[in-house]
Image 1: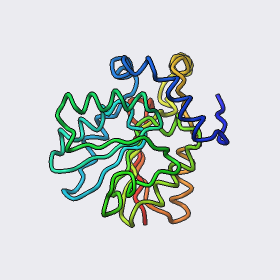
Image 2 (image 1 turned 180 degrees about the vertical axis):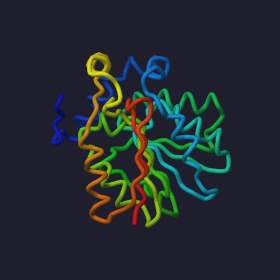
Image 3 (image 1 turned 60 degrees about the horizontal axis):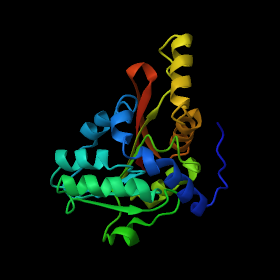
Image 4 (image 1 turned 120 degrees about the vertical axis):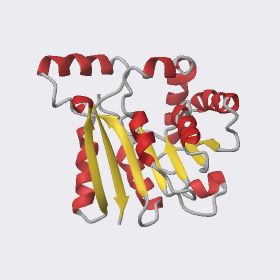
Length: 223
């Protein structure tokens, strides 16, 4: 399914709100069965004590809650295009009493300003894209924007759908068909863009395929 990169931010916000107005209530319960590898990212993130960490497309704040629980010395931030998702996210943060550790705001991946949104006095050190680049229409602009915001040495951590290359063709066809029912897709152009940026000397790249290629975990470190 191709997605129009010319969609306006207002249209994107409306589309996301319509999509998640009702599904946000069951999102975590349903997605845990196929958004594999998120906890691998959380374990391997290992932020320094003073690192500023921001998740782009934070959804229900599921990852941010686990991050705050695993790294209690850090403060975490998240943005999402959907106001509806952020309602669920804020409710979850309140339930876990993490209002002082995690801040979330409505924003667009391709244009947000973390310093202004969150009143930060330093750049973001680590960005997280957890199964979000594959559903963001302007995914390349969003990644490149995060890279531009990073200081030298900063990192972008990505977990997303892989090619399923290690699985037999019939199994791949069934899984991709099932994923399409949830409007999610493997985008090989994302990995290609990461390797192109590495070749251009923009940063270093560590990319590992997980679960037979079902997902991949990439760390892009800015040079």
